[in-house]
Image: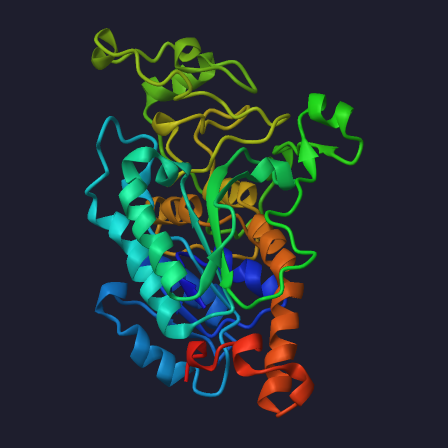
Length: 376
């Protein structure tokens, strides 16, 4: 199941890793529409709930949806704005969105998955949010879950064409046999210096492929419309890089605050792309100008950087689609992480099945999978 599912990046990753999705929850109507179109059609066993997660009863849903099945894996990326590193000083500490990690855990308690994997921004590990995290960790321990390392992973270290750092928190049932299991999976790519020291590493992947031609009828092959002055600024920005200083884009506010230097900069296609944010189609919000053309990147180009397939259609219009792309867990990274977990979950499932069948050699319920922890 996938909570705060957004457009469905994590769900698509799980499906590609061989999992069936039974439940997804997403409040944003445009994102839910995207999810429904791309993931629900042809999969009648997948239920999408497009309501606020605060309005739902996890226990009632668990009893309704998992009466005959065990939940192997619970995914989710609670809204991260309250934890964002862009929030200055003490900003974000009391942001009500931070509380959603605890709502997430209420679903963990109700559905009792074999494992849960939660994604968020690195800022959630900052000291200012220690109280919120400590409450989460305590709840996990009290619910018989073992939390493995809360790690910050960079997508480019796993062969994705984007430098994107995110926290992944993995919790597993206390009684799972973790012998031979390591977390996180070992990085497969690195910068030239790392590759020179470790021949097993491949070099980071560039984002050049994101800028190949799109299909003629691709509704997401769209970018923002820019005024004449901004287009002229883009023309002054050198190909494959540059910044606001190169563009000559100087606003009155820059007299007091010089601002972020990479805004209005071009993406360098020979390097991994910058992080695709919720404003990734807006050149005023980051280095989101096309490498050579005089406009911002398209939704399709941003989606490719996030490793969505071209067949994946984002609903809701330009701005809504850009937000969905930026909020998503990159599909390829999600697949790598979930496939890494899959042998562990399969072994737990086999042991549980043997126990349910009355195989005495499988051990007691407490040794294999606590009966009270399985959603009934």
